[in-house]
Length: 540
Image (tube, rainbow, N blue to C red; front, top):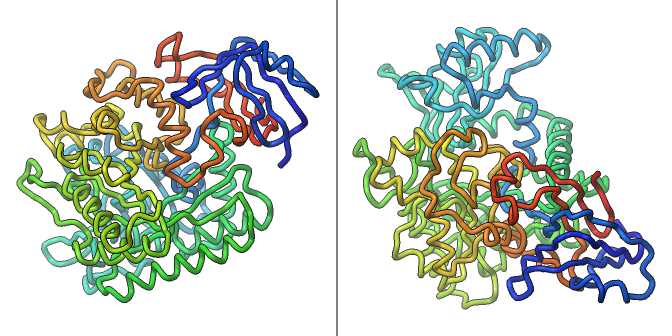
């Protein structure tokens, strides 16, 4: 991809994400790179300008970077039965039955984004799905991706019966007779169910999913994506896209390291990631790289599987998915090899465990410049804030998870007193913690602009009537944009983008509404008015 000569973009307002010089009048690009950012009168004197683009008052932002996505699952989800706004069980069953009737040749029916609320206190059960689709496997992934709900035919297809042991870090929920009910938690969903589906699919499904997801991101104004927690088949799909020159924006990958119960098997996954990183780097393509590994320390609050320092409202307090010794061994080994470690840590106990593991790596290996990441950080103990900042750990957060429209089960699990401690973005920012914004799609909508709206308001992007969710924890609009551009790029190891400055990539997005002037509400339904990637105008 090459830019088209020296181009002067003028007549708008340019937010640079550089706090030393946050605003400018003009951007001049020279091929793939930015040549100048500053006053229009000075830009006009640059020799050799081939074209001038009148921005007509548009706001220019650095290209938005998605710091946390799951590309294959996002691409798949765009064609699955959407259960996010199902009203009740009958509505869930109706949607599945209609999908089955409309797809008579489909070997199985896949659905996504189910929530516990519509079940009115009942636990998901295979019989509920058998009533809707009795003749084919049904696989439903919860909105947070950490639970699976399947029918009897799917259990049979996966080979799950009363004798199947729970996987390490997961639960096959069983009835009083020891039979699987159809509800799968944590690695039972993440590995047994989703890994089982993966084995049943061929490469063409994953290839199409990658293309579909990246097309949506490109249209939404995203100029680079991090994919966290890649299985072998998913990474292979990205690698095939690279070989076909079919990646429209660069992707950085984090390969999953799963809890297996044996130290040797877990460390072998780190060695495999090192080998894959070397193989991919040898191709020299800027469009695909391996940054590190992804580890799930705990579950999620909605299903009561997050690792918390204090019990949930029902008295339960699940253990972390990793023991301290096992986690530290993997993090130390990855850090020694220069692999960045991204750790899913939602509960305050999981956050603390992740910080401890990074500290162990620094003791063992010294500081050699690898900035590790914690993902989500939905509840953070006050004393953890300073440690995160001191150790240089990135807090990779997803504002869309705090949308009040999806917070019912979350609040019920924690109770009112602790709900106010949730999603402490402003506290993290004030403590000097490096922030990166993403969406965790498809656990949540992938569009970056509504995500920024939630970050800056704590209000719902889907239901304006709902009250804001502890607005004192909102980021300022400028800090939110910086976290979604420069912060996200730095978190992923991209030092050549995320800021509008000379010598960096000419990636930027144009908005026809200015949330700095019109208020963050302008982002709720906003869409890019234009997108420039590597000096080439992509949309409109």
